[in-house]
Image (cartoon, rainbow, N blue to C red):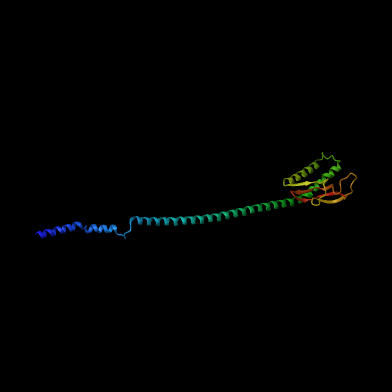
Length: 215
């Protein structure tokens, strides 16, 4: 009996001294070097998210650069189109003004002989009546027609010029004759008489003045 009791007590002491199998297994799991920690997994996920965000930002920047380049191309095209249209508008305006001026000049050339005839009629009437023709209604009508024609030409920019006393200019005057200088006459090359007045439209001469020049 004494031996049996001693054996049971020794087994009880051995059980108390050694940890249980479950506890040892739990401790082994806690201390196992091969198991990854939760913190390491979270760090890896954060790095993946940051890489995706950077790629998305780079893509957005590339898209913005492409959009800006396309915008600049369209803007340059619009500016060139506007410049071309402005040049076209100016050219058309110049051509239109030139055509109008040429048409006015052609019409004026057709009317100038009629004006010359009216001037000669009035001059002859003044000579026939010794300068007093105020009471003749026919001459009054001729004067009125002459005045209206002259006013119509002035409204379209045509003006007459009579260069008595000016130096002869072949671009403005047509010499019909020359005359000898008087002792106190005009200098040589000066217009002393006008047969027919000249007409001009701006800088364009429709008809040069027909003049007599001092020799």
